[in-house]
Image 1 (cartoon, rainbow, N blue to C red):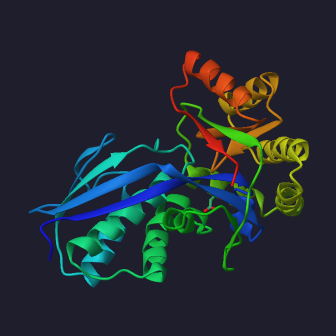
Image 2: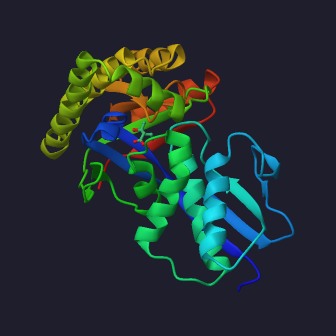
Length: 304
Ligand code: MEV
């Protein structure tokens, strides 16, 4: 047993294929290695969380069911009981940037570090998925996988993820809409729609967009990638997982020279991503959004 345990995990952004990936279609996701969750776990007489968004005992607190279940499981497999969990985050929570998976990922690492037990990747993934089951209902595993791997991925549920090479003279602007989105609500809403036949067709169309995007990434066809992002946003809107603020951000991105834009992650709020050729347009749009009251706007390079 160590005096304390530490863990760290990064966020992710889904470029193409959110929601469709739950239905076994492919998705393309990128790690956000500069945006991390840090956890320190100190043995204590009760389990409580100290964080920028919540301070107090976890037991009985709403919205933390996944972490509570995860800690219960960790207590079954590791020799520890209660702990004060101190969380630092550079990832906005409820934004579609994979914060819930990254928190679970870092908690698992910290518990294994505290108790000096080796942690293998399979156990790590399964434990994150246990927690994600409470936040996503039916998690594809894409967020869990990305929180422990730092390569761009083509991800398909229940198949081995493949790393992909992305080398484009382009940048993604990732803008938080300031509206918190519930992935659980979005996934459950789509599950209801998927009971209708015409929704399966729409979902298959989302899957095809991702396959076309994979080809466009290889062929370095930026205009096509932008168009595919617009098409994906249109389909996600038809699944009712967009939000007026996200739609407005998409329009603003396009009028500021983006090649394409879409919501990313669960939707109903959270983030919008926009593709810009080169870097200067992305920087100018980031500045515009900062001045318009959107403090969380990041830029992700798409070069190798
Ligand atoms: C959330 O980041 C991605 C979704 O596709 C849900 C999932 O894959 O578990 C909306």
